[in-house]
Image 1 (spheres, rainbow, N blue to C red):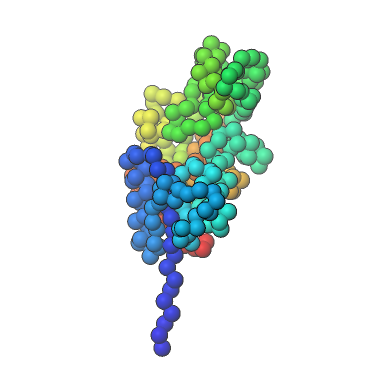
Image 2: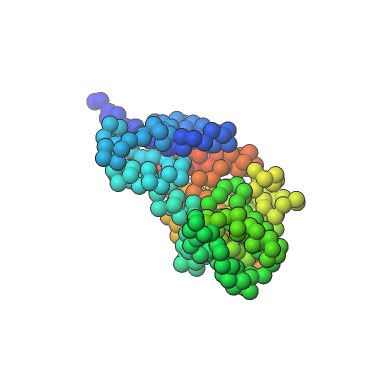
Length: 295
């Protein structure tokens, strides 16, 4: 009797066409190798590789069984989903994570602890923020120092600690029409946090990040890392944040608050190479196993 051959899963690792940085290439290689190790045919596709008109609806392409969306091109992701392609993570989840204002709204709607947050009013290119009455109101509740973050940004590069009104006003003027958030400064967690990596609703690896010379703990900004055993409360908070946003996997930055852990940020495309170096745990393997078990 001839046995039936098991059908091989095929997937795309969808990446940005223009980002050429080893930090990204290393992540791509880890994911591709993890797929190969379990018999999944995972092929890397740039946004240019699958570029086509809206009308063509990807008709010249043989769509795979799934896609791992490692870009922030929301319109491309939505078009692929409209054609029935299952994306990990979804366009909605990536869009929410890519906008710190949207992330804050979703966390608040789901009663997830985070720093007190104000969203900047809508500004237009021709005017910018010409009336700073909103800043005065934020000052009344947040005081100084306060954290000001551009709504979009990575590796902590668009996150600022301002110590007085003069610094805040100059920074806001430099943003022009770009949206930003103003947040309570969690002094207890200055220069330190925990990166909690979540896959499929479970914590798979965590590390403690710290920087003695900067309020930001990001490794890219010169921070350090070491293994860390997360508390039940930290894990539950990170998992709850991922579930609220609808993420299949994420890197969640958790702060040390006065009254318990506090969510700082949620990253839909976590750069987990540092976690691998720190803990020996390869998040790519967990992502691929989760996808295989899900499908």
